Image (cartoon, rainbow, N blue to C red):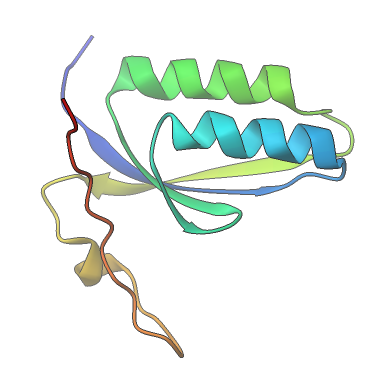
Amino acid sequence: MTTSRSRYLVTYDVADDRRRDRVHRTLLDFGDALQFSVFLCDLNERERIDLRGRLGDAIHHRDDQVLVVRLGPVDRDAREIMESVGRAFLVPTRVVVV
């Protein structure tokens, strides 16, 4: 399995408040919230599979939907592939706290 990372846009539409909160908390483990139900995640293949499994466990498959869109390799600047109408898009920055 490759260790290269790809950038994903993940968005969700979950009908139940409890399930929606669980999906949101799960996604916080994998990426940065751009909006409440929109996340930017930089994942390798193992992490993508893990995320998909955890999200699959969190949702009701008949009523809820999670979309995962591959945006390409993480070395591309997010501003090259995203455009904002209204408030400017700011690239999230992660800080390591020890």
